[in-house]
Amino acid sequence: MQNYLAGAVPYPEQFANLYRQKGYWIGQNLSDFLQQSASQYAENIAIFDAEIEINYQQFNQWVSYCATHLYQHGLRAGDKAVVQMPNCYQFYVVFFALIRLGVLPIMSLPAHRHAELNSFFQQTGAKAYFCADFGAQKFDYRELARKCQAVNPELQHIFVLGDQAEFSSLADLLQQTAILEQAINPSSADQVAFLQLSGGSTGIPKLIPRTHDDYLYSVRESANICQLEQNSRLLMVLPAAHNFSMSSAGALGIFYVGGAVVLGTDPSPETAFHLIRKHQVTDACLVPALVRPWMDKARKDQDDILSTLRCLQVGGARLPDTVATALIQEFNVKLQQVFGMAEGLVNYTRFDMSAEQIIHTQGIKISEDDEILVLDDNDQPVAIGQIGHLLTRGPYTIRGYYQAAEHNARSFTPDGFYRTGDLVRIREDGCIVVEGRSKEQINRGGEKIATEEVEQALVTHPQVRLAALVAMPDEMLGEKSCAFIAWQTQDNEPSAIRRGMQLRQYLKDYGLATYKIPDRIEFIEQFPYTAFGKIDKKVLRKQVEAEAV
Ligand code: OOB
Image: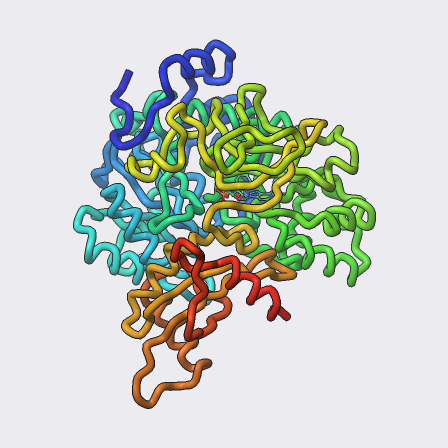
């Protein structure tokens, strides 16, 4: 056995053996996984991207070319690379090429800025960065690369799709070349394949080490549960690197069965409906915040496009029961709720469940060996049907975050259960219902904000004495963020509105991801405190709710 990634927590031997015995872990790495689909489905289209169609054979070849080029650039097995790309076929080519080389991709999202990126480079010593030239609102990722490189000298290889400026061309990595055997060096299936990101609840975004074995088990099972097959065409308008988009059943589920991913760069109903028609899309995955705009557009145009889908998956945040009902009744949609987490555990409603179960629950777990505990504040099991903290352990749930011993001691029990921070109840019929959250996290339409991270950024401002970030209910997104600030006044103090604008700009310059910039900022003189002397966020949340319009 190769040495397990330093700083990652391996599965205990006894569990690893059990998961192999049960046939969950089959010893296949992600490189061979793609190779297998390329042999089995060579001529099938794997990816539709704008006017480009790529079949499995071509896809797999590009992956090998790309791996060879990257080897020639100096990347080696065991290295790490931050991948931050828009939804485009090159994203999948780069991902699998890194895997084929034995380099560990770190799955950054397009909305991340230099605060997040820097922390990834610092935590991992990644040597390479993959991005596109520009993103939404003409954001320049090459500028981000420069900033990161200035403080992370080990970052030596920067590949840019589009105008590469002083960096290397990402497109050139797909040029035909003689494949170098020594470049092909994927890690074995029991090893960490890549690092996913946690929404997190504390300061720095946590890295989630996923092995080939555990990830591919969840992918195969998900593809079965979602009943994907060769003719499936999955619309991908969520960020491709997110765990939902990758594996639930996601692009990898599609690649497993020889189907096609249809890429879209924006999730507006106009773009999505056009792509659904053009490519006869069968499946789509969405966050709840996008469901309403899609329904509104379909209503307005009296368009029955949604009923042409075989399945619409919704996950990442709680789908309101009313929206689920309207989808099923008004639009005749086959809905599937998905409640998952990048750390592992994923639950799905099944197609043969009753409408009541599909509307009101988040379904059931993937595996009979997903162990689920619902505990009270004293870690004691609650009675069936009662709300408690969700803990889980199983064949595709991590045993610890990467290089985070101290944090792991809090987030995992000594016997390896992950404390999800979600409040759930399990009904008599076994279905799980997400009732809320105990972790300090805001779920902004599926994008997760660790309140502590934003508060830490806020208090670095010289005039912020104290800061607290709380969730504020929102029609569209479910939740938005509101920052409460104790402000050190100075002479000639600008108005609160102006101060708010300055503070937002300050956070942007600080480098926080766009979705983490507070939606609302309130300046207050006196913070409410709990009996223990902690800021009483319950009171702040009540205040926000009372004032929400
Ligand atoms: C997915 O993954 P993450 O890592 O971005 O976020 C996980 C958290 C969960 O702990 C929960 O708080 C929330 O997101 N969540 C939901 C939910 N799905 C996720 N809360 C209520 N209802 C749902 N359906 O978000 C993710 C990963 C894989 C598949 C789907 C979503």
